[in-house]
Image (cartoon, rainbow, N blue to C red):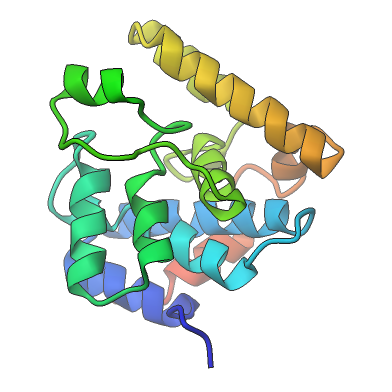
Length: 193
């Protein structure tokens, strides 16, 4: 038996937490991209799938940058494993450094993805805008437009790192799924909302 909730259980957790159908579809799209990327790595796929599905659980209560910290706290209260709560905490962009935490007034903590599972989920989220699969440059450009040069550089560096490890540009891997992967919509249909 897995240590992590399966897809149906994750969608139920999102639904019960109060996430909107739109957030659930987004999480399912991120899961589809993350699962595809994970095929190129020796990584814990069950952890990646659960992490991708639950990464935005905090949006049930907060739609600011704090949703990651809020979501990690929610996951801890649900008794989910630490490695899963850490994916939720660290999924923003390519992570937030200490300077970002101070500037954004978020609780002190480690927000940089370090494990391959944390990196894959964070980057899959960078490659999904709402419920559409996009190139990583979409997120880089959004961050630059907001004046977050360091964040944009971290996303570009994470893309380069993972693409090199994978052996192929991850933009091509993600975009091969299509703009709105059918698997994500099927997953989201599990929600009652």
